[in-house]
Length: 314
Image 1 (spheres, rainbow, N blue to C red):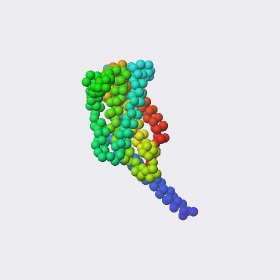
Image 2: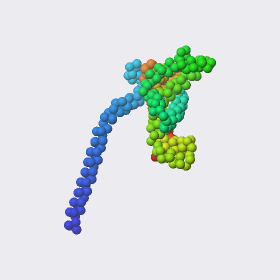
Image 3: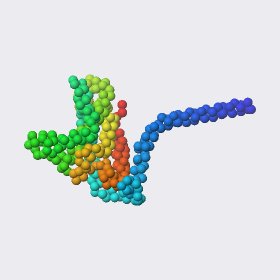
Image 4: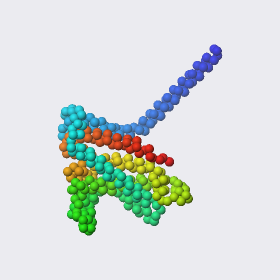
């Protein structure tokens, strides 16, 4: 027994040394990982986390024209916001805008992607045309559509006159202003959505279509049973991104309508801009920004909760 004790002690000491070495290795690996992530952590801290916490802080205060806090008001900015008819109007408009733009963008882009995925002569030219809107800035696209929507010399009203229809005040008529902004946004977003969906279509295994052809399946049956299920991860991605982008729309609103007429195109982001940089009410603007952040977070979580169930991963 006395001979076994030193051996047991030596084994225990060896096990402790191994465990200590494993801990040191884990610490070293974690330190290396932190060093690799440090540039991203610094950038996120400066451009994401600090603005977020600063916005949360300002939302509980009244501020002066320079943005300095003056009076602590607690939740008053939030309570006032939900009793403000202009903000409630922008809240409603934002959801309408999402409904107008997201389904149309995805459906049109999917249609163009399916056509462009066919082995047709000259299809490369059309792929370039369909993705060309990605190279156009929001400002340039807005100015282009501003000309098209012009009530007197705009191309759209000229076409209506050819068919004997009356001219439409695309950007001045409350009935048409939101539709005009939606058309502009759909045109601007088609390029990116089309490119992502085309990449998803080209990643589908062709043997699935070959097997379906052998069984004599029709085109629409293959689209419903093969294309859509195999493309569902890509569709899930583009729908989620499109919803987030629609909630954050600002540029075309600012250039085309400035939220008018009669606040019919006043979305939440433009309402935040006007409250902060026109009215210099940074506290209430920060409260609106926090509400928008929570709204996007909830919509994204809902999308993952409901949409991911139908996603088929290969």
